[in-house]
Image 1 (spheres, rainbow, N blue to C red):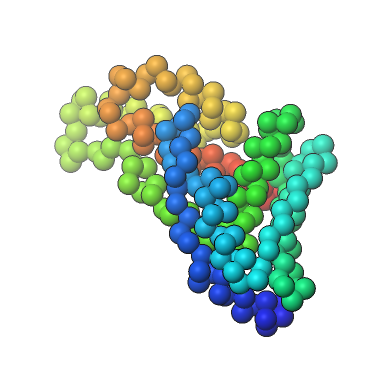
Image 2: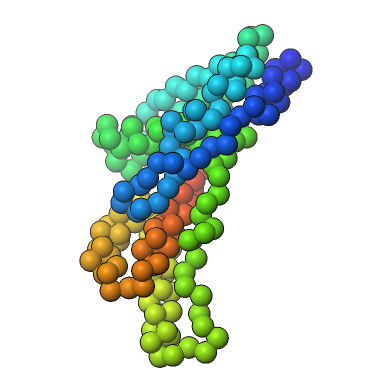
Length: 198
């Protein structure tokens, strides 16, 4: 990398906007930074610094292969290739994997990150100092929910589990659906990140 390109990357990072979690996942009632938010926060700053972005997806029948290139006006470039398995090998599954890969590759290559708003509602109910039998049952139920979420190994497992739980949320404390949705999203990101590393 030339000093000129390195200087341009520093300028771009300084000018990058925060990446806000504005999109809503209707299945899990949680916020996340979609591809449009990532592009809006990073591409203008890169362009102003003389850097363009190309993202080229390919599919080999098993894996999505996304090549992301940052190109500087000097002719210098920086390239990253992300490979990730595609669980659903249909247009929708490949498109979803491509969007995910584009989002995270762009975040990684620019040093940007979505704002962390998971901490507000991600944890389950705190146990009381002295538990009643009803509270102990609730805590046990929350532990089972967490064990079920952490036991999901694929996105499809998470979707299936959530669909089964829909009819039970009304019987549980009001804060639990949102807290569980945040935990599901954390687990989903763990699954996707692990798949991207393979």
